[in-house]
Length: 130
Image (cartoon, rainbow, N blue to C red):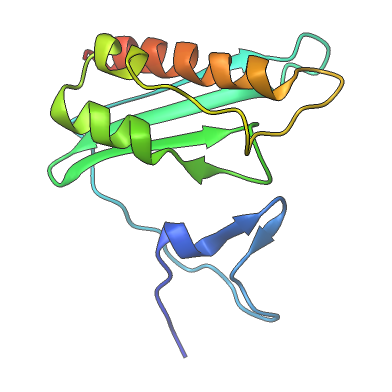
């Protein structure tokens, strides 16, 4: 049997997906964005993203995905709403990023990660041509 899973439902947490035992991914489809970019702030020792932000403007709206801030990748509704109205770095800068649901650890506090989300979102929009 085959089934389709929206990305919002597929990613469930750190190293956790909606795949059931024995299931394989056979295809991935997504709309080709008009504009898109990914920016990350690298953790110096590992070069992994301390925070990464992907922005995409498609024919149906804007998507913003954040990595490194919580228990897996997540969308940021506030950034999506602001960038849906004006796909500009200034629109991204106008969004207050709350730190309450973000992780903090020895590499960065939740407040620092919140600031990085804002900065990386602005840079990603600028890189995408916003």
